[in-house]
Length: 398
Image (cartoon, rainbow, N blue to C red; front, side, top):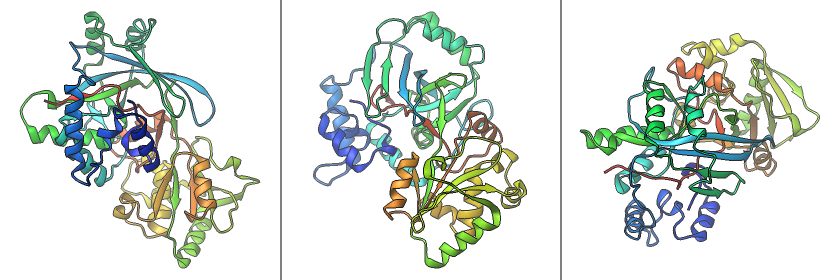
């Protein structure tokens, strides 16, 4: 039944998930009509059929759903991340309410809105963070997760997802009271949240459409990790190769590396990024020569934003050196992303992409600092791992 969020599913993985089960959630969350018709109408009809056949059933009463994800991260370390699933009222972005941390692309927003209109449901939870400095919320939930889970499933990455149903009124009330007025920071699912806002206003009035399904994780949770998303360039003209080389030499100290194992820099205050191109295939470490270069390139942005490697790369390299516009970046015109270093190396080595920039992980504290300035980081600046799977729970909107 489970699947990754729609935006990380490759065409090959989509076919595999479809073939595994007629009830895999990918059939409705990433739909396609077999006759070439309207995929959103297909998703709506299938979702309704699953309810009629009681493949999907309505919960009998109010509950919170604690979720534990045991995983091995891209760094090889084993961890467990704990949170819970619940409905959250849809509100405008703002201090003390809900904050985004990344810019979004227009295409996915329109796709998710069409799917929501058709199914009248949230199919995939939004992953958000909250502050729980005294561990009050985590402690209340952990007291109910020492029994066998309500459900358990493993995904293709080896993550073990364990889900409990918690209906104890006093615990639910404690969690509600503890989080009343707490600011939420969206970690993953910006397109889905913005879709929920648009849909709520379209329907108007009060009702279930004013709420959205979220997975809430404490910022203090020891299993919360952030990994980088690397940048890929393709379609560079011959003159752009030289322009790029000049920009790198002008703005960065360029250090040759002995091999590709050190291309991903550690998190730190200094802006550093690994680099390799398809022609020479020699790895380098780039270190920004002076923070004032970032300040000059990003004069209208707050200081925390100017210290982001993804923002500096976007300003100095993508826009200034290569002439990319916000629109071309948003539509991935000449730009791509890789979730891990091995993938980035493969596509550059094969010539599918011309070059790759290897980014450092962004600490959660820096994500918070940027969000607190009401700015949004460049797209794919963070990779909160693991993803919260789709198919655990749905939230009907009417």
